[in-house]
Image (tube, rainbow, N blue to C red; front, side, top):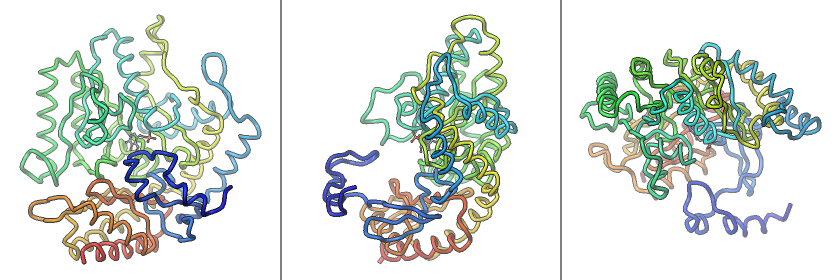
Length: 451
Ligand SMILES: Cc1ncc(COP(=O)(O)O)c(C=O)c1O
């Protein structure tokens, strides 16, 4: 490894960062994170902060999860790679598929298809949804319905169902045949109400209207996040997902739950679908499946979908989709160890308890800081929406948002900003004391920016 000065001088010079303007990164290079321990990270200058971002919603068990590290090391020694394309597979993957079928049994999901991350998992769901209908004798079902403000990764399919301009405009034209419904968002919506149940009913009516207009027999699937994450932690009313499930069922439309963030306890329930009492037809997962230590994902498939594919006797049922790294043995070993630790530590219960403490602390900060327009959260995914004017709900200026992040960092906690939102998604092993540290640092950050 080169010396520190070399690393600092070359920061952002020869690489482009995701979700950032290359020129802006060169002008304001990103923080260089050199090490991690427990729920803390240390930057190149030796400053240690609590990681309230949790890597990127994925390091649920923190940075010192020895069983996962050991599993990766051991698997690298045993078999560092082999393909799972027709004709070969590997032992940890077979064991993992068994464990995942157990893990997702309450969600009615029994088969897995492996990927290298969240965008791959979303793409796989979309493609398998179309194929399901072809195998099932309804080849015209090709369209997708999604939510505005939803985030589904950045592949062309995922970007097409994505509900945020930032990830769409510069890459258009996207997939044809995608319909977006409004998000179940009480703070900002086109229905002129803040009543979550009313908003849900209105979205349901729009969905029905769109189905009648398009023709149910042209729609393959609805894709939704049980709690919308990157779009600003939007928590739907408890009736929202059950209503979407019911409408999908009535019209033969598949329900894809995008649980890349929510599948392993983050909301305080083991899955976001379980949180709302709904069984999806397919579920995209990734991120925390390996505690973020290895790029890996799994699409979970319901018995209903599996039965249609598995009973098919023709080429239309053959899956013409997959990745070189689908079912990577090191990822599978990492996932097996992660699942075991996730269960042993019962992190969903901790996420629920710590999440309530965090949310109530944030509400107190809202009373104190005019900058905070809205507070949202479920389990250990929370957001503050910053505004320059509470009555008008106009978004806070970019430099103010940056100041909140910088001053919060100076006070010992890294938070994430996305547009006017400050997002928190710490490891699910945080203690009550860690939550207080987050609130104190954020208070300092908001004070500095509001001054
Ligand atoms: C709900 C959801 N779907 C898909 C993705 C894309 O995952 P990845 O960045 O691993 O491709 C993300 C990433 O944050 C996500 O939050």
